[in-house]
Length: 72
Image (cartoon, rainbow, N blue to C red; front, side, top):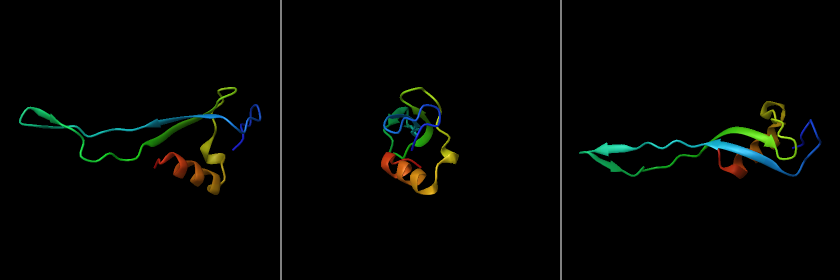
């Protein structure tokens, strides 16, 4: 993965989003039973803050990114 703006290929910021289902039973909050995997929200170059277009990545790189982050 390389930033098309500055050429950085080492450091990237990854923003993920994870939501939890909170159940309230008899007026008491129950902790989430099962936590899902976070969704990938955005990848930014750590050098220039340029957004990395995930659709422009080849399939193998995109798959490696998703697996390494544990995202869906």
